Length: 220
Image (cartoon, rainbow, N blue to C red; front, side, top):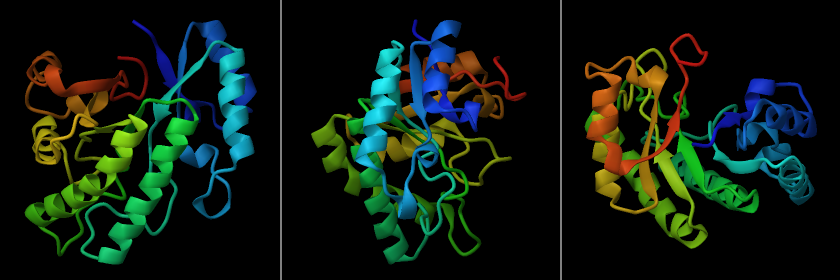
């Protein structure tokens, strides 16, 4: 088994220092939160991308992929009835797919609780429709880049939409793409009625990535 860690854990550190430090700890992978390397107006500098990838490689670290995809952004939402906002969200996520590929990553974890929250006038069925619409539009670029998008259930303390593995599987099944799969996390699974072992066994065939993040935000 290989271990990776998320780069925003080391907020304020230089990327090179993070790679050197985690390598000494025994990690072999790093997940990147896009906002940590973002340039002005949600763009990404090719020079920065090159430096992030090469500095990781210099320390034997693989960029596993990206997560917290819509973190610290404005103007994007996954379940809004506003069609322009949905189009803008597709455009930005498409750029993140390209970013992930340029970094050498193979997967993206779609959590982003605030940007998927179901607002008051949207019921669950409508929210599902909008989420599925957005993910369908991303499938061609996922296919061309061979990047897997992993949908992450989150607990009700973080969001009011997709709180269970079963709900996530409903969306994934509707997309029906080999590049849209399931992500599970200890913290989120701890809020479900089924036990963590039961959830892992139940969804093992579609499980593509896993976060070992306890409810206390430390290792489980």
